[in-house]
Length: 290
Image (cartoon, rainbow, N blue to C red; front, side, top):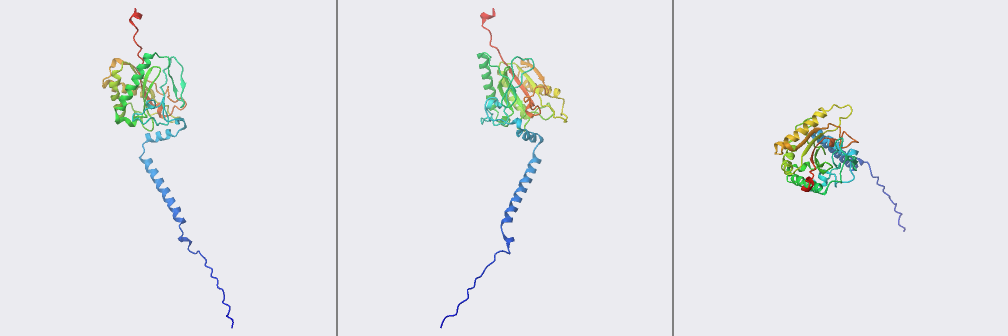
């Protein structure tokens, strides 16, 4: 007796019907929540940022402020920051502009800033200036409370001698906008430098500069009065800290006539006060005085 043929039963199971329980939407939702958190964090940071810091951030990313290197001669403290970590500023600074009528030619550095150097100085003057620069840097390094200003202080040899520039940089300024009264941090720097400057034989000249007002904007103060007032304020601080009054050779304001960046006179680094230690020529030998 033969066995009956058993039917073959094939079961087909259809998956689906519960797609809403998948995990793809969770990933999308997590990305959305993360983006919203980042957005609100950005809004909070913007609300907590001062206008001065916003201007600094804007200028940090401006093409005119970009530099191909991060240190070296011409930078803040000539590439040596107060904290010894080196100059990391994206916009390196060079020597201030020469005054009208001075001899010698001006040249442009890699950032487009006008600078001038005179390599014809005597070895004695060159050595004196090197020593002065070293003394000034050492005095700055002894002031850890102003380390945050390492990008705002430029110390460099120029044709006239040695120049110390207090520059608005990286969202931090040395004077309040439109004011001739410096910040306390600026006063601290000047008072700390006064003993070193007093020990050097050089006479000083102080020059105030500011940036040009953007078209359509109203400057917070008259640029001539502003720069002259800031230069006078620096003189008064140095004098009050013991620097002899008879060693000031001039105190002037240049308004916006000598921008550090002629190609972009609106940049904040054009706002600066420069202290120039003038070259001290060595005394002539007695037989030449006869």
